[in-house]
Each structure stands twice: as C-alpha cells, then as structure tokens.
Image 1 (cartoon, rainbow, N blue to C red):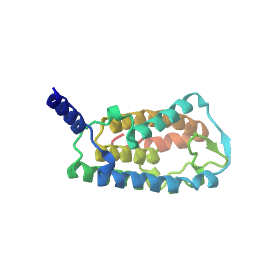
Image 2: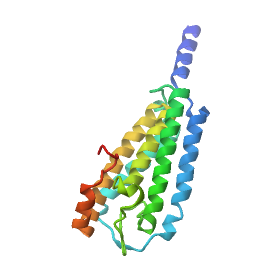
Image 3: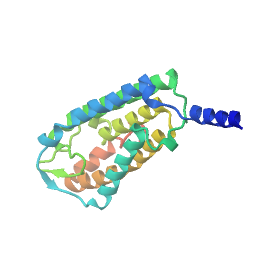
Image 4: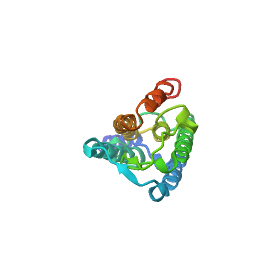
Length: 208
C-alpha cells in the first residue's frame, strides 16, 4: 500500500510542471517587465481626458484582462499548473520568438500613439489624433495585436493549462475593448475613421 501511494504521488508530481525553471519562460516574464516600464511614463505624459465612455463594459473587461495575466504569469492556481504542451526547447524557442515579436510590436505601437494613449481606461483625449502611421498603417489596434501575440508566446513557454486559460481571458477582454474603441473613434472622427477602417485590418495584418 505504501509503494502504491508513493507511485500515485510521483505521477502527480510528474503531471505538474514548473514554469519558473524554464529559461524561455523567464525571458518571457522579463519581456513583460520591459513592456511595463515602457508603459509607465505614458500615465504622466498623455493628453488630458475629454471624454470617458460608459464604464459598464470597461470595468469587466479590465478585470478579465487582469485575471488573464494572473493565470498567464503566476504559478496559481496550482490545480491548473499541469502540462498542456511540452515544456521543451522547440515550444520554448517558438514561444520566446512570438513573445518578443509581440512585445516589440506593442512598444512600437505605443510610441507611435504618443500622448493619445488612454491607458487602463479607454478615453478620448483633448485634441485627440487619428494615428495612421507606423503599425497603425497596418492594423487599427496594434497594441492589442502585440499583447495577444506576446500572451500566446508566453503560454507556449510555460505550457500550462492555466497559461492558456489566461490567453483566452485576455482575448475576450481585448475584444471588448476593441469594440468600445471602434465605436468611440467612429463617433469622434466620422468618415475619416470609416475610410481608415476600409483600408486596414482590425488585429491581424492581411487577415482580419
């Protein structure tokens, strides 16, 4: 009976992986730190807010995005810290490549957006501009494109069920925010925004 119990315990231990021991996951975690450091000055350098749309959908979207990052980056909940994809060099390298590409794209978009950036709450700024240069010449929401790509890459480096749930939660939250922003920009810029929409993609260049 003791041997059988030990065998069960060993199997349970093998089923649970340890993402923080992966060098690829560590690189991914560091990339999110860099992204956060780039984001931070924007809270003090953005234009004054002119209009804040209803928070009825923004608050749930922000909460869902926060939950998504908890599942993506933390070791909790431990019950979901089980392998879905292998934590090996193949998935690790692909994950890091996607993560760094996503973070780089998001930073590029953030710099292109400049003082028009809203931050956590979607807002319309005073003298808000319809930015159409840099990554905004390809997609209308390149920051979200980069964040989603980086989330997928990070999930691949971790390989856990929790991390993929985090990606799913992040996707839903971002789609809610995209809908809010599309309506807000359409109301503000009218035909100019309609023209912009006709010649660009929403999130995925050349696809969607």
